[in-house]
Length: 615
View 1 (cartoon, rainbow, N blue to C red):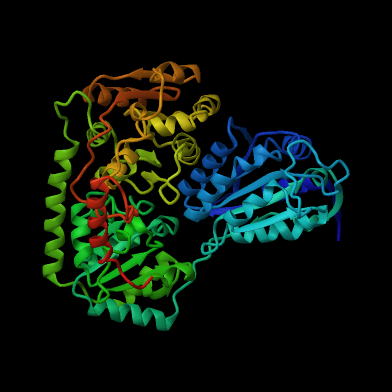
View 2 (view 1 turned 180 degrees about the vertical axis):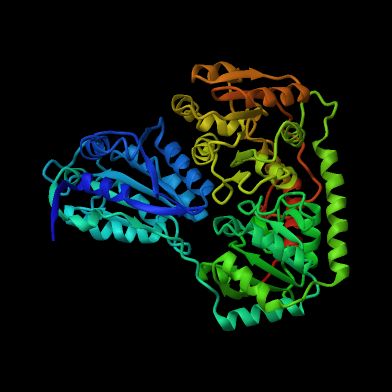
């Protein structure tokens, strides 16, 4: 058996560069490259290794470690988890800056390989610059922060440890059930140490998507439950898109006459014009979806973990007599809410259910009810997104303007604040993957970096990032990266003067306006932020519009621009779409001097009584 003498860092990147995947029948590298911000913990070892294969394994430079990991995660999501990226940093703050992104990937079940530098395995120069020392444990470093938010964590303290660590890492990254972030904390002296690695370790390997079929007994039980249901509803989650099962879902739903409601991750599983597409469900759901879900006697949940926003904090599905069938590739999720589990790939599972159901369809009255609810909601939504006469438009009206200037192939990207709720209800999805929301972790600052990752994955589609002033101020640096890489984004920036979403939530809980809008925060003077000048300083084109008509024109004009464009519009922090939606369990104080809080608590206690007991 031949060997190749390489440093551990060289061995890592060579191994990653020969892992392959299959996308639409085409064999491609599994890793699209590596994001890197270099420091003393990785510039010598990983830096030299990445330089050596820079033509076949691209390295991308970012401006913020959290942001570059967001971009990598968004890339993987837009690629349906078929392709992914790695991220490397120094030790210390460079490493811990990625912890938030790692948690985001963990919650959303998305693959990313994080390679933070670590302290010296030899410990000869301890403590080194940026080293975090534990007084009671000499094995701890800052990279241990990644342990609870990684699907798999390992520390490379000897060069030969790299081989089993990488094999285990790739097994997790490419497994549809275990998928999530992997952290390989790489001791900086070990990165530079040489070892004789087996040549076969670097042979190309094709990693196909595993599509597990359902258990026969589980399939029979699920099919029997569906046949017995009089008011079934399908809940489409992100697993539908990751399994490329949207066409299977569309056909299944239409043949069976079953309405389909969508989670944040599952939105765009069906195009808005599909007759069975009821749109968003739950806290930020449409009137159609929530009316049907509340009356359903069976929910077929496909590729979703049924988080609180989907279930209305377990109150929307509160009737213990209603049944839930959980079709999910991960058994951990399939058993939630006392559901009948159907552990399988979404596409294979739907096909198996379809075959088991024969010519069965939902009662005609339920299907007709579905069509009536959809028509009613479409009229309601149109009223909220139509232009108005107010001095400052609502978020809904801005969404309407962007939608009118859009095309079915566009991808809208967002993450946190009030916009995700409005988009979930009101955005009319065209093509699959056209709705890219990070709402599992609801991470402010994801939007622009995430848009960058989406554009890398889908370069032929127009990527429209919608972001509030709060998130923009948290993390905007990758505007410069998008310009540098020639990856044009259209960024619609809504300025409502602070954290408008949480300000509304504060009021709903009986609280006084406090510390959310800039005007309600402790200040000597309110900042006069020139967002247009700031975006231009980062290299983007930028303009401020004074009306919805100007916004529509600006979005259309940005479509033909060669570089990233930022379009600023002032909005009203007050209104949100009060139609549709459902209760969300946000604990209200039992005791307060404010009568508004006492009133809110009474309402809170009433709603809690409707929560489903089994979880």
